[in-house]
Length: 235
Ligand SMILES: C[S@@+](CC[C@H](N)C(=O)[O-])C[C@H]1O[C@@H](n2cnc3c(N)ncnc32)[C@H](O)[C@@H]1O
Image (cartoon, rainbow, N blue to C red; front, side, top):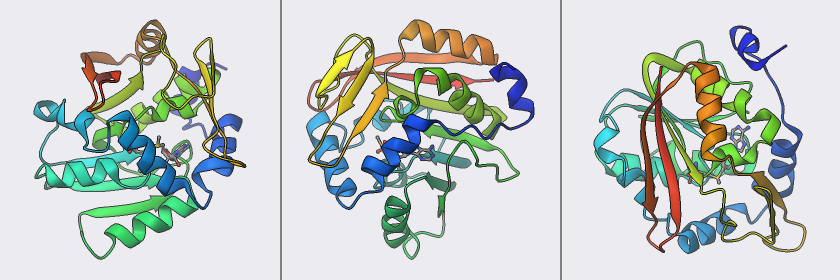
């Protein structure tokens, strides 16, 4: 059965690589420190990705931040004057605990949930979905269409999906190996992440299969001069 038929049934596909990345990196003791160091090194710590699409980001509504990490995106969006409701979804229990400590008392507009996005179904839809800093690359090539399908399922008919990816012809900054869009990162002993960077053609193909529209596609430069791509999709 194809991915499109699956959408109607809200598939709960668990990608093995995605699960491994959680076990061998995101859920480990030093994940926050390492993510912060990588955001600094990659020039994303200031939230320049979100700032580059600020004019397209509504100031209110119901926003889902997929894979909220240590809160980089949530922080930038709150600082931008966003007055809507934010759900920060996080699969790693360790990062979830960290996010709860940071936001639960501070903002009644931020709700942190620990769940795999592929299983998440709150029973309502989101006006804005952010999947930034290569979240899609945490899913293997064969599951990336299912990942976007799940985000489309979670998005309202008038909503917007913001997707950021690395450029697929350049090795990611921290990669220890890169071949045919597949990379490995070994931040330190016992820590390991792998990923797949979709090409623009693959993204266009996913979007067409899902009946989404590319409202915007930009190439932007991070604070440390890394080139990245940002897309806005609508239904
Ligand atoms: C590279 S970090 C990006 C963090 C944040 N979005 C940002 O831009 O700063 C990827 C995050 O996605 C989370 N993640 C990975 N797979 C996930 C899944 N299936 N469901 C929910 N979160 C997931 C990871 O635990 C990690 O926090």
